[in-house]
Amino acid sequence: MEFFEEISSLKKDFPKVHSVAKDVKSYPLNFYQIFAIGIFIICFFLGIVFGNLFATCQTSSYFYSNICLVREFNFSLMIVIWFVSLLISVFFFSIGHVISLLTAICKKMR
Image (tube, rainbow, N blue to C red; front, side):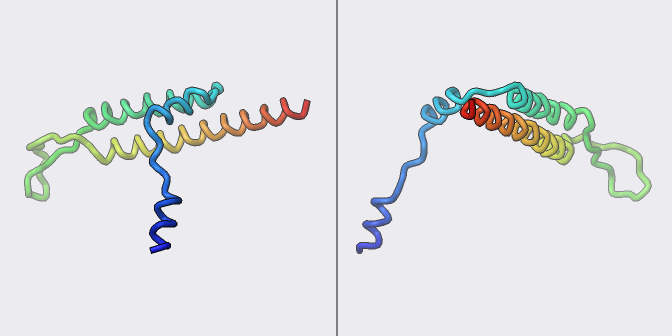
């Protein structure tokens, strides 16, 4: 029973939404981090728009049929756009974080 008591004493609750939002608001963002968030939001909506514009075509069961029976939303294109935008935004956000760390080090050295 001591094992379970130790687990319950070490257990932590999940952070609440308002505490996480307060921590995020207290963190100052530089240009690169704001740019990364903006790129991700824009590309999120672009993924939905391009998935609808370049819809997939469900054809008949014949091999050489070029008749489009039903046009469907292109989920694979949307997911690819979302993934690429996530990679690009994480890259820019990490550059901004490195710059903010370097400026904090520079301020402490002065």
